Structure formats: structure tokens, C-alpha cells
Image (tube, rainbow, N blue to C red; front, side, top):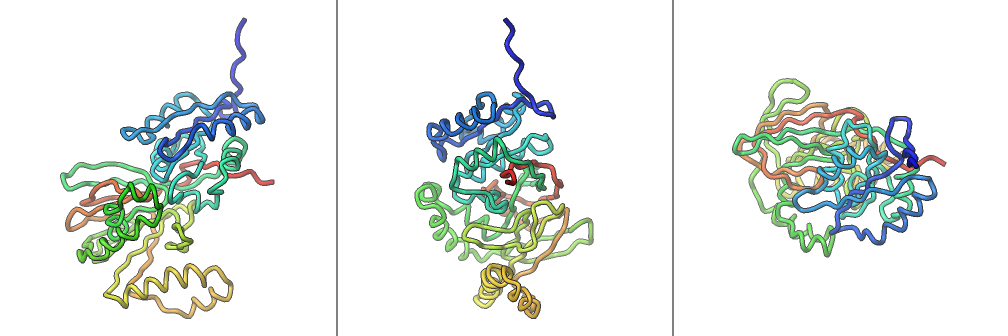
Length: 333
């Protein structure tokens, strides 16, 4: 007797999911009954479960999922797991589904996905819709001259945020979440070294810049409802850049007012947006937009991608790969 061939969708993928999970952040035994119930409901074959390790945080598992011909890959872990899995799925046509399980859940927040309802997230994974979004790619040259290529979904940053992550106690972060960053922020703020860089935006002329922090974002929102890049959109084919250049206490006050009051409060109201039209730009904070940014630094600096430090950069080139990743979102009623 021959066995039935597995059901496949219109693109040739088997009606089967792969769930890539970080065992430090996810209790698989709690998820399996939910997954199995939804599988039976929608008529899919049993899910392929792939565990990440310290040595392989998701890339090898994502490649194995693609080789198995699955219809969707579910990333269950923190922002690092999501970024590494998405890096492999970029351009594959296989959608990424999110099961938020970390501290930041940055991409899920920016897509307005449910953060604390595993059943809803898994139902979206099996029966949701695909949304194409941009990904950013970056080539980083370290202090030795070696070049490393990564992709990121939310933000790349140098300066305060990268130094903060470098000083964060991972054990405390696991216990206290975002409170673990408070001490690290204090350490980073005491660092008086400025970023000194030369850069080109979209092939324009070379410009020089001294700044405290620079962040390149494909998305604009951070935890605690912080809207850092108010005009950033995940599918507009470009990234938004913010440069922080505070001069002492007054500069930090200007940045705080811009980010927390104007972006966080006024921009969310019609009357507030009219009021913003009358406010002046401040030197301490500047916004840029583009599709490609090339940066050369005066010395190696810590750099982070989607909230994870990836070492030091002496120079880098980053660009947008438009609509190169499919993300599974809830189906409209």
C-alpha cells in the first residue's frame, strides 16, 4: 500500500509548519498541545520542532526547515532568534510567523501583533495572511578588516544603545527584563567618547559628523511605547535614521521632549500634530531618510542589531532589501 502524498499549497510547500524555539525562553511542553489542536483543526501534518543552541541560535534550524519544504516557519524566542531566522528566510518566499517570547519583541510590537496570547499567535501562524515587509542588510568591517554580513528587521545602532547592551547583565535581564538596562544606561552615559564618522547617504557626497548615538531603523517603535522614528514604516522601501548630538544637560532635555512628548504624545493626536508644526527642530536630534548608508568611523565602535550586540564596527554599509520577507499576520475577519 502506498502512503498518501502530503498536501501542498499553491507554491509547492507542504502543509506543515516548523517551530524554531529558544529553550531558555520557551516551554515547549506548554506549546505542543496548542499546536497539535490547531494542526488538526486546519488539516496540517505534524509540526517540525527545531531547538536553538548557543552555538546555532537559529540559522541552521531555519535552513533545515526550508529543506523540509515547510509552508511557514514559526520563530519562538527573543529578538535575536527572530532576526537570525528571518535572515535565512529573506527572499525565500516562505513566511515567518512570530510567537513573541522575549523581553523586547520589537518586530511584533511594530506590526501590532499580540504579545502575550500564544494560542492567538499560533492560530495566525497556521491560518493567517502574509504581509511582505522590508529587511535591512548590513556589511560590517571590524577592526581587523574582516567583513561580516547580517540582516536586521528593526534597528541598527552605534553609541548609547550599543554600549548599553554591551554593559547589560544577561542574568539580570533574564530575571528582571528591561529593568536590567537601567544600570547599563548609567554606565553608557558616563562614556564621554563621541562617534566620529564620515558617511554617504544614497550615493551623495561625503559628510563628516560627530554624534553621541546614531540609529538606522526599518521600524520606529521601542518598548515602553517609545516612538523613536515616527515616520518609519516597515514596508516603505527605505530606512529612517536618527542622530543624537546632545550638548550637556540641555541637549538631553531637548531629546527627551522630542521623543517622549512630541513623538509619544502630540503625534498621536490630530490637535497635537498641528501644534507640532509650530515647533522648531533642535540641533541635539536630527532625522534622515535613505535606502543606502555607508559609514567610516575613526575607531572601532560597538554596534547592535535588533537589540543584540554583534561586536565592533570600523566601517559599515547598510541598505534596504524591499519587501523581501513575508510575515504571517492575523487573517482579517
